[in-house]
Length: 156
Image (cartoon, rainbow, N blue to C red):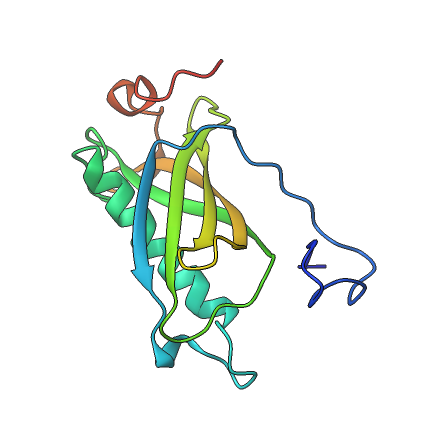
């Protein structure tokens, strides 16, 4: 269910796979190193560790826009779901480039898209999407996507 790859390592391992198309343009890029503690018993990047690295990339993405997760133009954020499609292995010492952008806006949220690439080899390690809702934590309710955030991502 979680792999789709042209890389020989993953070919033919799984019959049913999730497919995730990414946007053509990303608005942000950051690099994060894979630590030994990010590996699983198979000796490669663990799925839960990748999710944690994506969280770090998201925090940096918000910061590049002048926001924080708890204050995106006056609203907090929450994640309602996530999809990760692994494409290749990553190992301790690898540096991963995380490209991030927002898209598929609704009244109260949007999707954040991630492309994760090994900076040394250029191989795509994973692609992902997280659904983000905007939330007023004081009132405990969803709110509209802040205009100051939405306006930075004009959908074509």
